[in-house]
Image (cartoon, rainbow, N blue to C red; front, side, top):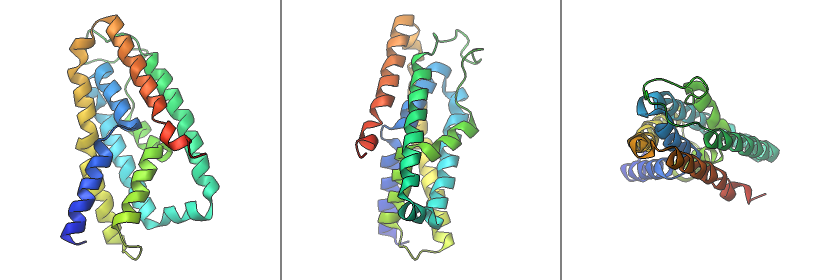
Length: 203
């Protein structure tokens, strides 16, 4: 990979990772509801799951969408249904725990494996992964280049999405009021639902 392409791809990875989307909205809500430390498995799960996705797409999974376009449509619908479920969970979250280092008995942050698995039904993640290879990586690239791209994307992605959880954790003290806390969670749930529009309007 040439240096100019490397820089351009790095900028692409950062911008697509840090801009609003389902992952970042959920991390913002997680930071508010559980704090940054308890959101770390969620952050690492996103980047790890995305690494596997990018690697798989680079090794030929994107071709499956060309041969079987119904598969991509199916993933979109599954992703949309799961996002609606997550939006409901956020809206139904209870007031912040007084002890920020422990989890509520009825509420807990997304686990590493759940966050990793979510990438496979996250519409924005698919757009990012396919866009990376269609724009910056020649179709004839070998396994080493694909692995390098996937690793670089994951390295850039982790701190980029982590910013959202960190920002959310700094807002905790301003949302100790139950009314403000509920307004925030309702707002996050609504934004998560609205994030589906750019994807679903294609149907």
